[in-house]
Image (tube, rainbow, N blue to C red; front, side):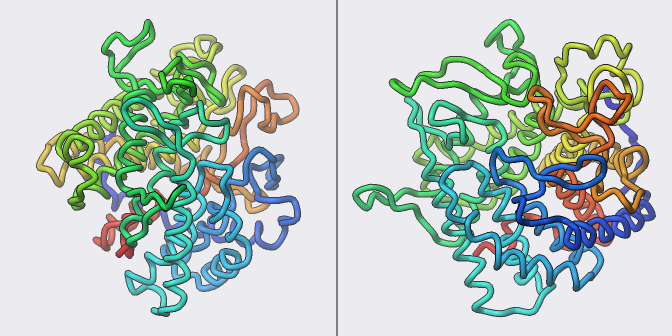
Length: 459
């Protein structure tokens, strides 16, 4: 269980953040200079150098979005210019990509961040440039919404595995539908059927809360408050739910921690985004109070599970049911050990989850719920660990920023150093991006800057 630092404050992380952004800039420059874009999007590092891995093209947004975050945090004009150039030149295929469920990851990290900065007055206002970003977000939301599987009580955005497959990951990516809706867009399907994007995303959220998250209510033998299934399988003939499954986790009955982290952040962020919205879509699905209650329950459950099932430092192993964890010893009662001989740590899950903890804490605090402080302190505890060694990459020859991340342990895709039994010491694009994102979040807390929310500028 995480040993929560109850006294730590954002200001206590100021010096660590300064060092973090200095290292971050060097990594961004190195990738821009040395990575061969002909290989596709960079995914993870092998022996310190970024390489690609063909499965889906889902990491360009993290690469180019990182430069936008770097500019926002430090004023580095060069990284901003690189990001704008790369977004214009290389992101269009991601806007129209009908084969993936990753639109929010790619397009809000680039077009969305740039539009937000213009709205916040941090880059010069240009009406045509802003319209270009808005159009990309509008279309991306509609394309994401088109990946639709109907089930008896609604539907969900299916994964690249096919119409039978609901991924827990998509809860964070589906915010692109919210942004598209707030920009006044709607999805027109066959026969000119007009589909409300907010209603569609709410249906997906409800399906994820019901099938991807467990609440200790006896659903199966392994039902525990906050456990998540990476994939939920449905019979496409009648829309009935069949079973949990895992692609990147150990099993459908264990919890892949990055999937857990996506849920922590996704539900918490959507709670923030939807709180001020009043729309007929809520009434069509049982009312706003009911939907927000379901979302809050899912956010609380997943965040509680992470706190309970993570080592005292706040950095998780790749799956809470990984088969060799017991060989490490009392792993929950000591800091995570990325150099152990049995199971890898996944720092990318910790970076994503930390932001989920902070956002849930902020949401509850704004509601007057005193428990919000508990989650904020848990998030700061995790970040404090990640901003220091062995997780912060201080070697300037290593292109990664956040060390000890895992992409696909079951497939054995991650780089295993010579002499080691497990993968360690490497980075991934989503881990680096989300570490920058949560670092920016904390920096804004320190300087009392406007709250960092993806819906800023979506009007």
